[in-house]
Each structure stands twice: as structure tokens, then as C-alpha cells.
Image (cartoon, rainbow, N blue to C red; front, side):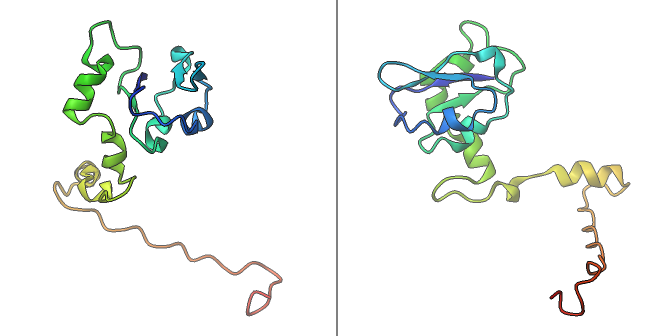
Length: 139
């Protein structure tokens, strides 16, 4: 659930406001996005993902973080590297490596197929017939 909008990092680009599927944000008099409807947050991480300056933090919680929680402490989040960590993990942003290189979900999938620790074989591409009536070259 969205917990932090950093006033010091935010450049007031409104991208978070535009990408939020549930209209969680309003703008204050200075144009800073503010969390107006936190209970509507779906924890989709879109706002954090699209923020170009890592000014947002979405806690991986199903409800609001309690008072005094480190999930609500901007200074602690910045010091720990949590601001922008989601974007870094998925490989978004300048100079970042793709996060898929660190994805270990293949272990879970391989374990389900009886091959613990082995990457499963890629699925074959389906052979689709050409659409009817388009001729040999699709024209």
C-alpha cells in the first residue's frame, strides 16, 4: 500500500497521478502529489515503478502501515535504499541491470516438475496456421 511521497525528491511531474488505476492521489497547493485515498490503493506498485526520481514508496502490505512503522519513515527508507528499490529490482531506470537476472522463481517451478534446482525447459512456440484467405504471402 502506498505509504510515502517524498517532498524533497518529487519533481511534480504528475506521472504517479496519471498511472494510478484507482485515483489514490490528489495534488496540494504546491503541486505535490498527496495520498488522498490510501484505502483505494491496490498495491500494484505502478506509481513507484513509473516515478522517475524514486520519490514514492509502496509498502508490501495489504493494509496501511501502523504508526511508527519503518514503512512510513522516509529517512529510514532512503537510508536503507528502499526508495527506488522496486524499480531497481525490475530493471527500470537509467543504468540499472534487468532484474530478471536475479529472479529465482524458476526454482519453484522446477520443484513442481520434480527437478529441484533445475531450470525448466522453455515451452515450444505454438505452430499457428496462416489466417484463412490471405494467400501464400499473407497478402
